[in-house]
Length: 338
Image (cartoon, rainbow, N blue to C red):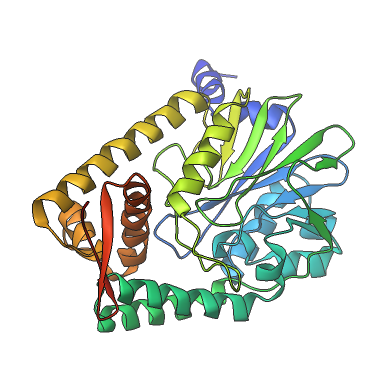
């Protein structure tokens, strides 16, 4: 081996994961976030964590990368799902149908996965109501819903054959994974912890290169809207307490300093919350969409709900602290300093 090859191998951030029998597969997606990380755990049962989106290109790439590791889709025996987003669940049913694999997901995720079409449509309708209520023009809402409906085919329903619960253990031949419920980025975020190897498979709960969006999601029937950012910060605090050497993420490279990174995320959100409060004080009664424009300028249609979720998450905290109050007029909510 050349010296150059040795350096390249040593600098590979996924080398420790491979040494632990966990292989990263980079599956293409149609989304701005780029490729999604799917993980193969080379153990018994042969386990796949997430799947990639529902597309022929993604399926072919998954098949090819499995082949590079000496496996086929037909060999998969267990699929673990981390959360409800399309780039993570789209191929689950196809893989399970071809392989006969068991499909495992946390209890809160099961209704979404098993009733995907209806659940995704209900999420879009809920998002439309939130956007109109917080100052986004009807034509922008309609355009974003059309985009979302077009994306919907990248997901697919699947039957969950094993229902997991928070803190439950999943036993493989050479390791035991502990299930962790971490709502915030989505209402169903789930992490899988290998305490012996100090590895956490975290999907989009924590990303190295960007701060995960705390997306507002439709609450179960009869419940109030969950404060996504409040929940996300609480979930991060739980993860911060864990003794970890490696966090395997849903996009990008692994994390080796999770406490430092989480502290940076806490600081980011504190500073953003203060900036939003100053904007409200300066501008008077203002909608969440107007606050998003003040922070980020002209916002692409595809980013409108992401940025709105971020603003509402921070205002939830400011309202709870008594620093801001909501004022509703003709179905539109504005915020003003308390």
